[in-house]
Image (tube, rainbow, N blue to C red):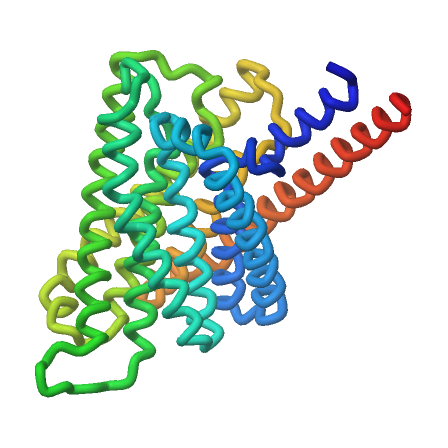
Length: 368
């Protein structure tokens, strides 16, 4: 293989810039950028929110095109990903990314477009929610399955809670209506929000048990503690956001019946997510400094940026709904940390792309 071909292969495998190499979790960058846009909107940073939102839309369209292309021209590779327990749960990033954009659209008062995006996210969640567990766990040829458990499994929790966030946000913007049948569109959204929130909490417990069993039966080394494990914290944070949205979402009967449970659970989940942050930072230091695993750009870093942004949004929402100013203050200040990490990862992504492209051009010139 020539140097030019080698560099092209490197560029494609590192970035997933071709239908043959795009990964199931490619929408993590959309999730991260989208939640930073939502956080900027909550802080009143309108210009920054708009820029980040449209950047997320561009990334979404780009990766959606690649995924559709992959499904058409690399169908066998796509099927292999669906049956790979260490990769398949990454497909849930599409659900979360779609609903994050729906939430952003709702915040900008684009209700009809937000509803359309939510409908796509809801349908994808229903399909993948049944497809992935059967294909990746029951239909996997890899054994033992426990050795394939990783942080990406928690993306299924994020997907479920993103549905709850989008549904409750949309419901809050519906006009009051009282149809003769007593079944309004708002009540349907309320039921969807509570079901998705409850299922998300249950799935988190299941994933945590699987990770715990793997840690007990199979060694988790520094090479395994990569950025996607931050989704453990992000899944809790988005559960808090979903709970806060439900609490402020309206007067639907199902909301009234679950208020005490959701309020209490959200406070506990926020506390656990706060505790996890130092633990994950220590794990990263142990991985990169104690064991000297190189720290460079990879697409998986976006799985760390999203939880950081989501924790900020969760704190701002919870502090506002529960009337606890100190939690809102934590969210306000944490946003700048999350934005700084987003900027570093984004710049690292651009710089890595430039270097890879330069290497490719140089190799092509030398070969010519």
